[in-house]
Structure formats: C-alpha cells, structure tokens
Image (cartoon, helix red, strand yellow):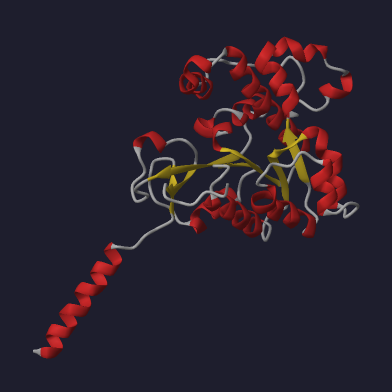
Length: 284
C-alpha cells in the first residue's frame, strides 16, 4: 500500500512538473502547426534564397540565426547578407573578412549597429572563419532619410557613384501592399507617403543586392527585420518582380504571452514563425 501511494505521489509530481514546463520559443509553419527545428532546417536547405526575419532586440532570433547558419553551412554553399550593413560599407566589410583590418578598425570605419558586438559580430566572424561572402545589402540610411523628407524624386539628384549603393532608379513602388499600409496605420498622424517610400527604398535595395550577388547552386541567407519580409511582401515582393520562379523561404519572429498556440494574427506571416515568450529579456 505504501509503495502504491509513493508511486501515485511521484506520478502526480511528474505530471505537475510537465504542466509547469516553460518554453522560450516554439517554431510554427505558416498555418500555425508546430514544427521541429530539424524540419524547418530540412525545408529551407532546399531553397535558393532564405529571408530570416528577426526582432532586432530578441536573443532567440540571434541565437537561431547563428544555429541555422552553422547547420546550413554543413550541407549548402552559402552567401550571407544583412540589412544591418549598408551598401557603401561593402569594401570595408570585405577588408575585415580578408583580415586586412581588425574588429576595432571595422568598428571605426563602418556604421555598425549598437548591438553589433552581441548580435551580428558572431555571424560576420562565422563568415570570416569559413571564407563565406557577406553582402551589405541595405541602402545607406542617409538616402532613406532624404526620401522620408522629400520622396523618391530626391534620389535623382545623387551622383552616379551614390546611385550604385541602391536599387536602380526609378524604384518600383506599390503603396497598397499590406505591409506599407500597416506602417501608415501604426504611425497614426506621423505616417506619411514619404515614410513608406523610405521603407520601400530599403526593401528594393536589399532585394537588388541579394539577386545581384546570388550564384546558381548557392543558398543566399539574408538577415533582416521581420517587417521587411512578413506577409511575403517587402524584400520578397521586389525579388519576385525580377525572379518570379525563385525558390525561397521566409522566417519571421513574433512574441506572445503564451507560445503554445500561435495567434491568428501571427499565422501566414512567413513559411516558418518563431514564436518567442514575450517575457524574454531583450539584448538592448
């Protein structure tokens, strides 16, 4: 009887422990079905272009970016690229990748993001150690700011050299895309058509440099804020204009109080959605 009582007690304790299990994140497919990391990796390994959408201050995003990069490198020939580097810093980035300058010189010469050392340096150093290309895909922010004030027309005033650091002009633009309409809605009275145009210059330029540097037989793995590729728009909209049949995968990162069921609003954002506990500590 005592043995039976002990067994029941242990079983109850075990069930309670499992019910109290905390998960930092869960990966879902676009329909909201839970999938394993292994399943996601196997699927995206077959793609030509992968847009890995992150939350910039989320440590799970950055950890999984590194894990995906490391694991894909075992099977695929990779080209890496990132929103976090602007196209006019490509030569400086190349110098660092070739060991011609050190990390301190990179920091002083390039316009690195404040969280570079913790969140992006591991990816760049991985590229350096494995001799992988790393492409600076974003438009220099000063030009995006100009568009935010004066619209696309201001780009026509730039020099031929400056125009090489962005998508060819005139850049296609569709203000009716859900992503862009949501930006205006979220900004309220501060939202302007020019603000959306500035966003589009980033999306168009990132798409341009991804396609410009893609090589057949390779996988281009690109790191960007989720809002640049959510809903299969943004960067992907521009990529598909040029390469409608391109084989791609998108990943998004979202936060929820309960990670065990994907909210309807977060479904269909991407092929794979990393749902992170909203209590997760931010990196900055």
